[in-house]
Image 1: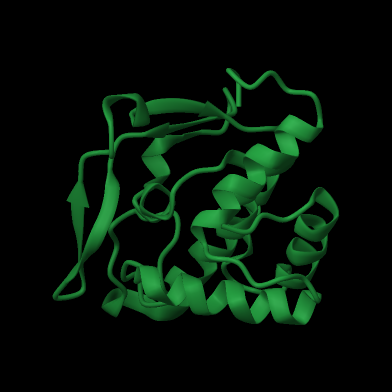
Image 2 (image 1 turned 180 degrees about the vertical axis):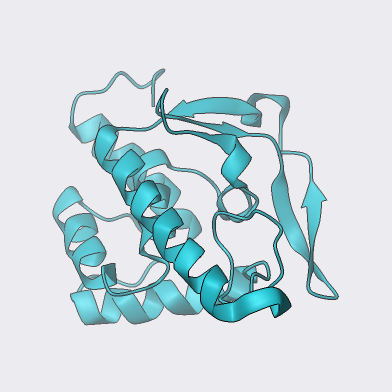
Length: 168
């Protein structure tokens, strides 16, 4: 397992700004959510007013272009996660861009209400995230890590900021 420092995470996100998956990467580092939890989010799971995300399901895979849902890994994984105002704004901007993509794609676009999907509205395949993160890490000049290590990087950053381990 490798983890990034806060400075490396900031450099990575700076390099990721131009990616259509910037909001996903930002959310991964801001919350420590698992990839399946992130890819399983629908817009109904986000409460912009309260600044929370509710984890109800995970994306286990894709079958015939349609999402295959699964219950979260553990009972404790079903949870409500607070998000900071910057993350709320990142998600709002992402939602606007996604709405523009939906209009351009027309009726052929699938709509599973996924927060993170392909331009055609299909679920994102997990392995594509790994290729994405490696390419952005290289551009940012930070060590290459696995997608799951974003979760550990999130925890490390919080611990270094003095957040109590039970909260982390």
